[in-house]
Image (cartoon, rainbow, N blue to C red; front, top):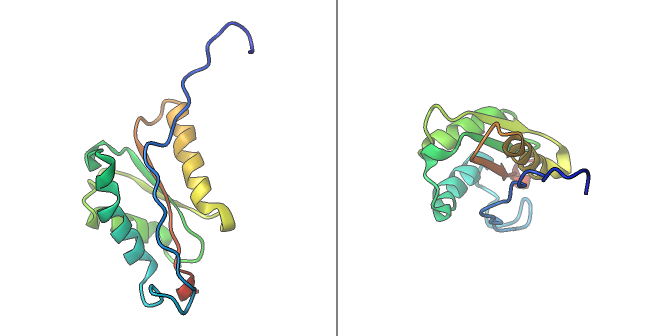
Length: 128
């Protein structure tokens, strides 16, 4: 323990879900674009959290190989019903982009910049 000061509560993920895995270029999602994968994830999985889309103050997505990742994230978020006032960000850290997105949201919550953030990672290896 450093000093007698209590540490602030650490942010905790409230929901986690893994998308299906298939074989790159041969699997069941080989003809599905990465933005479609993200949109489907947001529309089917996020409602399971019980958090209203209007409560999300930032969406950060980790993705590597898409040519316009910020555009994809923005379009998917709007199409999934998030308000146009919800900002989005795309981060690329190759093999750990989704983890980097989680770190950005967690750090922002810990600093008091956000109360509710959404971190996701997505990729379509079939299109690469």
